[in-house]
Image (cartoon, rainbow, N blue to C red; front, top):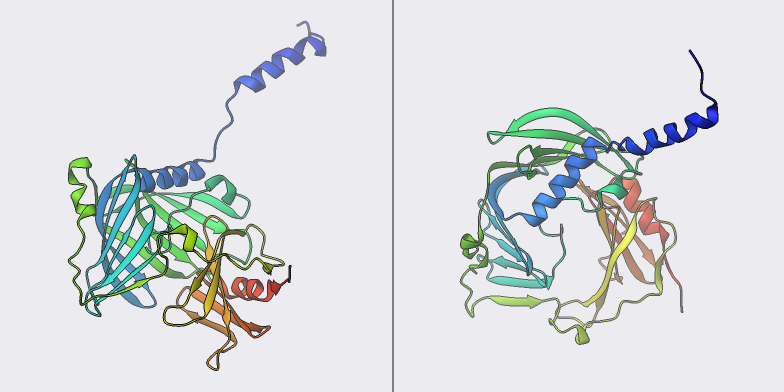
Length: 323
């Protein structure tokens, strides 16, 4: 057998390498499929939400068209409440207390159904693994486990509809490996444009309701955030997603909120003038951890569904740098 010179083999090897497709991570592909489906499809369904040793039953309707997303979330047990979100507003309605609260629209801030967005960015801080198949609400699902690579985040497990990519179930898993929150659909179906009325129909609200509006709807009247408040050292992977300053209703005081996320986990830092009721130290409720410190007569609170070490580090990293 004649052996060809190495220089003749090089073009052949390069050609072979180029022609072989790079295999994508199948677990990451399923999470991306779920993220796309939950934002771009129109669906409605009922689900149960387990948190803090409580079980809530809720109904969601989600609609997507050329104008964007619109969602309606209704509580089916306990105190009646309803949340409607579109591209501009987040409207919360409490019929029993006759109150309506209107705030800026923020994804993943009003619903226990949390869907990650920047999937590729998560890979550096989470490991994604396929765990096989399971059935939820009569549907075949693909199970994906998202495991944190450090101590600053919780893990998650998703059950993804094999047919359309919708999320059928999710579990939030703390640093001890315990499930601290869970969402599970008992029914979930797609619907078309002719059923958009399900999302658009507003509940009846009369003059007996008190309106609390956290923004005027006019951007020219919004309060500029105080950029002197800085974060010196956030845990790796967390970036500032948004910052806003609002007036506390009925007072002359302001609170500034900075939202940090790594694409999956998220938390908020609230900064406001301290009062006689201001406390310091850590606290927790279910999956939510908080840490409060006093800095220059201000109360700095970091809170979110992340481990206690994360909120403590972020609260202690806040500083005030006079411009």
